[in-house]
Length: 516
Image 1 (cartoon, rainbow, N blue to C red):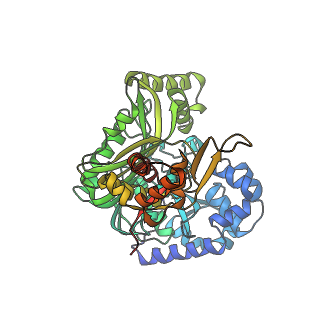
Image 2: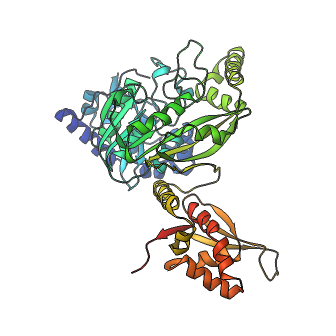
Image 3: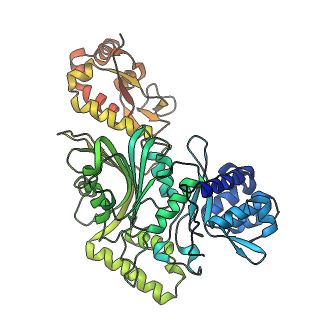
């Protein structure tokens, strides 16, 4: 692996023109997410996403421009200069350092990964060679590599964060810990100004390359840790895929900057959450991925609630929990420690378990944290576990969640009964019971989009939800149901607001304005 990075810069008109020609060549060869899938097939494409290259090597034995690009930029294989010239403006690539000459062959200096934007854009994510899909293990023996400064490309965590981010147009967005620049690239679509920070100057350089090659506006790049590079500035959107791994660091005291935050336990994620409020504009969002400790004798829900800064609403979703042995093994493999001799591996494993034992950590949770600076004296803080499948993107779902919290915060029972509601899109009703039974044992409302929640409701709840189309206030609907089922309408009005509140909170019902 070369320690050098391309010198392409959007500020230099000549270099910018060379980058434009490179992008045109990538498009002409169909070096795109769709083109890659068509060339490799689903099996080899999926294997490549797992850092397994053999199937892709077998699928690129020809000499087409696309096959040449895959072997150069994704499989780290040299290409004869003759073949490279058929696929790329080689002189431009050599001038800006995307390629280096090696006898009669050329080699890539970085990984360039096709990536499909949310509206069908053809983008490319730049990263260090061997780091496109996560983990340093794939470059463990690479020459010239400083493992502590590696920059990863697209992985599951980065696409998850991109999917949950609220995409309302904003004036200012901050990508904290930008890495390869994928979050800054997404933010450039809907933010007038994007600032990207990273402790690793190599990451800032690679982020600039990602933006330039993808044709996005340049971001303002600043070096430093957490919020230090931005002083007292505020933003409408803060996104971060931080180095959240809870680790004891490397044996020599160094750390892998892409994953190890340099603070003990989950302190980095806590600090990031707690400091974010001071850097959010009113109504602004902070969205990040995080790990948190499950500590003996402590409720993890309470731990995370204590992180939420004053004046902010929060929605925290735990997606996965691993016991400490699973967690240690995952990140030992990520760092390539499994390739060491047995004694060295055992010593590293032991160091991870010592770290957890010292902190009373029994397990580690992973999930999403979204804050919104509401300024409310009665903030809404939802901390929940949801390991079930969801449908990305979830940005609109996140935005609607907080809008519903605003409504519920000010709506007492009388307001709920006077309110108008609409059944959310893609909600279906399921009746569960024994075959042949006259009545179902219970009724389930299920979301087929977004969080894909399901909730049991009684006959009244099912009937109420089924007729909510926004035309009638909730109280009148309940009066009609009471008449149908022979219940006292006053008693029904008294006991139903709690159920309405729950259906609104979970997104089965959406408050709407009364028709005129």
